[in-house]
Image (cartoon, rainbow, N blue to C red; front, side):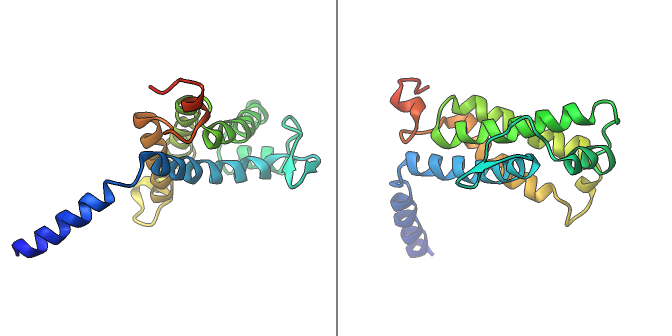
Length: 162
Protein backbone atom coordinates (compact mmCIF):
# COMPACT_ATOMS: atom_id res chain seq x y z
CA UNK A 1 0.00 0.00 0.00
CA UNK A 2 2.85 2.39 0.76
CA UNK A 3 4.21 1.79 -2.76
CA UNK A 4 0.87 2.94 -4.16
CA UNK A 5 0.99 6.09 -2.04
CA UNK A 6 4.58 6.66 -3.18
CA UNK A 7 3.55 6.45 -6.85
CA UNK A 8 0.62 8.72 -6.18
CA UNK A 9 2.88 11.19 -4.40
CA UNK A 10 5.19 11.33 -7.41
CA UNK A 11 2.22 11.81 -9.71
CA UNK A 12 0.89 14.64 -7.51
CA UNK A 13 4.31 16.31 -7.46
CA UNK A 14 4.43 16.13 -11.25
CA UNK A 15 0.93 17.66 -11.55
CA UNK A 16 1.95 20.52 -9.26
CA UNK A 17 4.47 21.55 -11.91
CA UNK A 18 1.67 22.56 -14.29
CA UNK A 19 1.91 26.36 -14.39
CA UNK A 20 -1.06 28.17 -12.90
CA UNK A 21 -1.05 30.42 -15.98
CA UNK A 22 -2.11 27.43 -18.11
CA UNK A 23 -4.78 26.39 -15.61
CA UNK A 24 -6.12 29.94 -15.40
CA UNK A 25 -6.22 30.31 -19.19
CA UNK A 26 -8.17 27.05 -19.48
CA UNK A 27 -10.59 28.23 -16.78
CA UNK A 28 -11.07 31.59 -18.47
CA UNK A 29 -11.77 29.99 -21.84
CA UNK A 30 -14.06 27.30 -20.41
CA UNK A 31 -16.16 29.91 -18.63
CA UNK A 32 -16.25 32.45 -21.46
CA UNK A 33 -17.28 30.21 -24.35
CA UNK A 34 -20.86 29.27 -23.33
CA UNK A 35 -21.69 32.86 -22.41
CA UNK A 36 -20.21 34.23 -25.64
CA UNK A 37 -22.17 31.74 -27.76
CA UNK A 38 -25.38 32.59 -25.92
CA UNK A 39 -24.76 36.32 -26.29
CA UNK A 40 -24.06 36.03 -30.01
CA UNK A 41 -27.29 34.06 -30.48
CA UNK A 42 -29.32 36.93 -29.00
CA UNK A 43 -28.11 39.59 -31.44
CA UNK A 44 -29.91 40.47 -34.62
CA UNK A 45 -27.56 42.27 -36.94
CA UNK A 46 -24.55 41.99 -39.14
CA UNK A 47 -21.36 40.20 -38.40
CA UNK A 48 -17.68 40.45 -39.23
CA UNK A 49 -15.93 37.10 -39.56
CA UNK A 50 -18.80 35.43 -37.71
CA UNK A 51 -18.83 37.88 -34.80
CA UNK A 52 -22.01 39.91 -34.39
CA UNK A 53 -21.36 43.62 -34.00
CA UNK A 54 -24.73 45.21 -33.22
CA UNK A 55 -24.92 44.94 -29.44
CA UNK A 56 -28.20 46.81 -29.16
CA UNK A 57 -30.23 44.95 -31.79
CA UNK A 58 -31.87 41.92 -30.20
CA UNK A 59 -33.81 39.19 -31.91
CA UNK A 60 -37.51 39.49 -31.09
CA UNK A 61 -37.57 35.75 -30.35
CA UNK A 62 -35.08 36.26 -27.52
CA UNK A 63 -37.21 38.96 -25.88
CA UNK A 64 -40.22 36.66 -26.22
CA UNK A 65 -38.15 33.89 -24.56
CA UNK A 66 -37.46 36.16 -21.58
CA UNK A 67 -41.20 36.75 -21.22
CA UNK A 68 -42.50 33.22 -21.71
CA UNK A 69 -39.76 30.77 -20.75
CA UNK A 70 -37.86 32.82 -18.19
CA UNK A 71 -40.89 34.44 -16.52
CA UNK A 72 -39.89 38.10 -16.75
CA UNK A 73 -42.82 40.53 -16.78
CA UNK A 74 -43.58 41.90 -20.24
CA UNK A 75 -42.62 45.40 -19.12
CA UNK A 76 -39.04 44.47 -18.15
CA UNK A 77 -38.33 41.51 -20.48
CA UNK A 78 -36.76 43.74 -23.19
CA UNK A 79 -34.43 45.39 -20.67
CA UNK A 80 -33.54 42.05 -19.07
CA UNK A 81 -32.79 40.52 -22.48
CA UNK A 82 -30.67 43.53 -23.41
CA UNK A 83 -28.70 43.40 -20.16
CA UNK A 84 -28.12 39.67 -20.61
CA UNK A 85 -26.95 40.18 -24.20
CA UNK A 86 -24.59 42.98 -23.17
CA UNK A 87 -23.14 40.92 -20.33
CA UNK A 88 -22.75 37.84 -22.50
CA UNK A 89 -21.04 39.80 -25.28
CA UNK A 90 -18.82 42.12 -23.21
CA UNK A 91 -17.70 40.05 -20.21
CA UNK A 92 -16.36 36.93 -22.01
CA UNK A 93 -13.79 38.88 -24.06
CA UNK A 94 -12.56 40.53 -20.86
CA UNK A 95 -12.17 37.09 -19.35
CA UNK A 96 -10.46 35.58 -22.40
CA UNK A 97 -7.96 38.40 -22.74
CA UNK A 98 -7.51 38.61 -19.00
CA UNK A 99 -8.43 42.28 -18.70
CA UNK A 100 -10.25 43.17 -15.47
CA UNK A 101 -10.58 39.40 -15.20
CA UNK A 102 -11.98 39.25 -11.71
CA UNK A 103 -14.73 41.74 -12.58
CA UNK A 104 -15.58 39.74 -15.71
CA UNK A 105 -15.65 36.52 -13.69
CA UNK A 106 -17.84 38.11 -11.02
CA UNK A 107 -20.30 39.40 -13.61
CA UNK A 108 -20.61 35.98 -15.26
CA UNK A 109 -20.92 34.29 -11.87
CA UNK A 110 -23.78 36.62 -10.98
CA UNK A 111 -25.42 35.84 -14.33
CA UNK A 112 -25.04 32.12 -13.60
CA UNK A 113 -26.67 32.57 -10.19
CA UNK A 114 -29.58 34.54 -11.69
CA UNK A 115 -30.09 31.85 -14.33
CA UNK A 116 -30.05 29.07 -11.74
CA UNK A 117 -31.94 30.64 -8.85
CA UNK A 118 -34.39 32.97 -10.65
CA UNK A 119 -34.97 31.48 -14.08
CA UNK A 120 -34.72 27.76 -13.30
CA UNK A 121 -35.06 27.30 -9.50
CA UNK A 122 -37.04 24.08 -9.90
CA UNK A 123 -34.03 22.48 -11.63
CA UNK A 124 -32.13 22.40 -8.33
CA UNK A 125 -34.37 19.59 -7.10
CA UNK A 126 -33.95 17.38 -10.16
CA UNK A 127 -31.05 14.89 -10.22
CA UNK A 128 -30.58 15.55 -13.93
CA UNK A 129 -31.37 19.29 -13.70
CA UNK A 130 -29.32 22.03 -15.28
CA UNK A 131 -27.66 22.82 -11.93
CA UNK A 132 -24.76 20.56 -12.95
CA UNK A 133 -24.15 22.62 -16.08
CA UNK A 134 -24.30 25.83 -14.05
CA UNK A 135 -21.80 24.35 -11.60
CA UNK A 136 -19.50 23.68 -14.57
CA UNK A 137 -19.76 27.38 -15.46
CA UNK A 138 -19.30 28.57 -11.88
CA UNK A 139 -16.27 26.45 -10.93
CA UNK A 140 -13.74 28.00 -13.36
CA UNK A 141 -15.15 31.45 -12.61
CA UNK A 142 -14.51 30.87 -8.91
CA UNK A 143 -10.91 29.86 -9.68
CA UNK A 144 -10.35 33.13 -11.56
CA UNK A 145 -12.07 35.14 -8.82
CA UNK A 146 -9.95 33.54 -6.12
CA UNK A 147 -6.57 33.19 -7.82
CA UNK A 148 -6.70 35.77 -10.61
CA UNK A 149 -6.16 35.39 -14.36
CA UNK A 150 -2.57 34.12 -14.26
CA UNK A 151 0.50 35.27 -16.13
CA UNK A 152 -1.04 34.78 -19.59
CA UNK A 153 -3.30 37.82 -19.25
CA UNK A 154 -3.43 41.53 -19.87
CA UNK A 155 -4.00 42.09 -16.15
CA UNK A 156 -0.63 40.44 -15.51
CA UNK A 157 1.09 42.32 -18.33
CA UNK A 158 -0.32 45.65 -17.13
CA UNK A 159 0.80 45.01 -13.57
CA UNK A 160 -2.57 44.33 -11.90
CA UNK A 161 -1.38 40.96 -10.64
CA UNK A 162 -3.15 40.69 -7.29
